[in-house]
Image 1 (cartoon, rainbow, N blue to C red):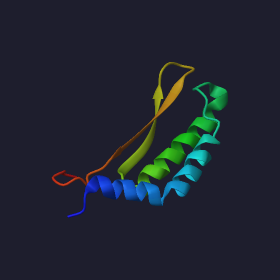
Image 2: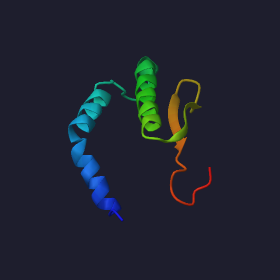
Image 3: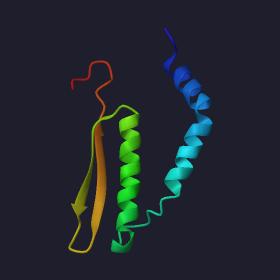
Image 4: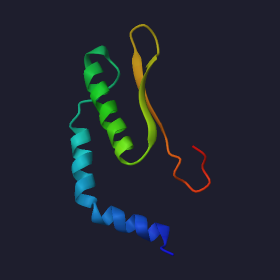
Amino acid sequence: MTDPIAAIDAFLAEHADERLADYVDFLRIPSIGTLSEHRQDMVAAAAFVAERMTRWGLEHVEVSALAMDDSDVSLAIRAFWTGWPGMVS
């Protein structure tokens, strides 16, 4: 049986350049705060993260708007992963 920690370490090392490029792409999205002038940037950042979560195998990924008050809307991303042995989907 393969050591799961060693397998994770190997995967991370093998994909380090790809992961760094992905992080840099994410950091290029100017997702600063929840001010209305940054709304489209926040939506783009949430969509970026949601797409990655789907790519990584998470299920039922969704982005939701949470109204804090009349002028402030925050976004939440939620997903499920039922791939762990013994998990029920």
